[in-house]
Length: 265
Ligand SMILES: Nc1ncnc2c1ncn2[C@@H]1O[C@H](COP(=O)(O)OP(=O)(O)OP(=O)(O)O)[C@@H](O)[C@H]1O
Ligand SMILES: [Mg+2]
Image (tube, rainbow, N blue to C red):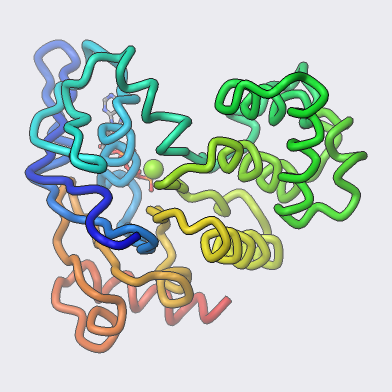
């Protein structure tokens, strides 16, 4: 399965608060092939999250006006009615957020939550869905998956919760996984483990990965292509090797300088 999976063209997002207008995303254009890893980097506030949310139709209605095009497997997502979008989001496109706690529900066990995702997507019975949940947790590198499945989010570490969140995202066997700074809240060792895990799962499951980060060190490890955002615009978008060998935009150079200070992880 090769070919273009996602094609974003001239994507714009404008927020309006009263008379104030924020152009958060400006004419952003990029493509993703099947199985490709695109790392989107850029300073805080540059529009990375808003770009990814706009593609999935997750921006607050009313406050944000979205224009341009985002075609997924040939179908236009921008302007698609919510009911139809649900056939894509959480099914063909999955999303992992920075803080797993922001979408893990504190009152249900990890196993129940993943099983619910499995049931939603495959219509499995309760017991079969729970077995699948444990399998997904195992796949995500959790050694005592039975025990983790019985645990509640507050009983697990940040790294374990992020593994659980990844398991939940994978329950739908997505074609595109969007990971928005999924390791920012973790220590460096756990961060490296989670990134290795994502790359292994990607190898096995064959999804395309849009990975959002501040840290170009991560791009060097995992990216095929890198997209650099700056003040709402995509200022540099190239094959990783080219970008690292001869960065063109001043902001890319800044990010690379910061990376050298942080060192390889
Ligand atoms: N709901 C909103 N209403 C108004 N402005 C918003 C909203 N969400 C985001 N913005 C603005 O859009 C711009 C882009 O924000 P975005 O969250 O995409 O940045 P980011 O690159 O993801 O930053 P970070 O690395 O800190 O996550 C910012 O100026 C932000 O203030
Ligand atoms: Mg963000």
